[in-house]
Image 1 (cartoon, one colour):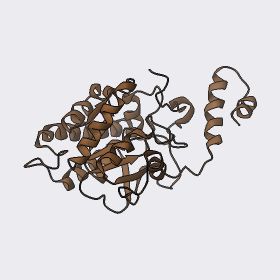
Image 2: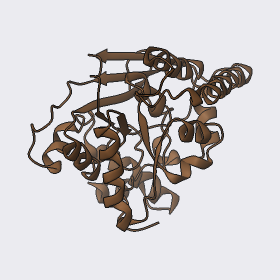
Image 3: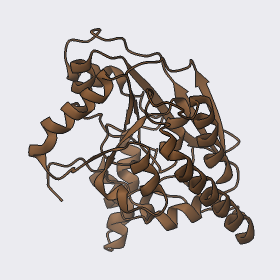
Length: 295
């Protein structure tokens, strides 16, 4: 992996809290089975062209949004969506990135062509679905391919498609977040389309932040799937903010800053101390020294 690629300090061992009140294994298996069946149904229907707004006989967007919410709900996660509906026409949807659940949650706001790393092609079930749904796969470790990638996104936006992206470039645990990278916003400027910011947050039924949904670091997809399906009372909150009209911001730097979700309530140093404490504890460093170094 190239050194310039964005990365997060989050790891499943340091950031993901153990599930204290886990669902029964049979219930978790039933949830994952339901998710798999829904994804298979999506693969079967994907040739109808739900991701392309100009396809004849395409699946209505309302059905796609409902199907995406069913996937998340089948995994045992409740969904709360606030804010106005996303506008029609060419649109760049951007959101913070915590989990694989973010993908159907963002599509539930508006069906879109997903900007995804090439590795997603190899994911079981989800990879074929993404490919058939018109995903724009990118090679993240090829810096020279970036201008062509931006041009491809701009072309899709100009043709009236919605494109969904996670500009942080990596998943974070939810206690902290990364900075939105600017390249994808250049495509929105070039195509003259609005940007739709979305904030995704996971919590318990009591509103307390939770990390069970986080898919970070060296976590495997299967481990994350099981953790989500085993969790009780997991809630996904999706805040659809006001769209940013074209030409409101002069450059991609200002546009990325305007689209960036507000930081979490917890200060970043708390997250840094948490990660540093676990890392140094694994090396035998006393916890007090680890927190001091992180501060």
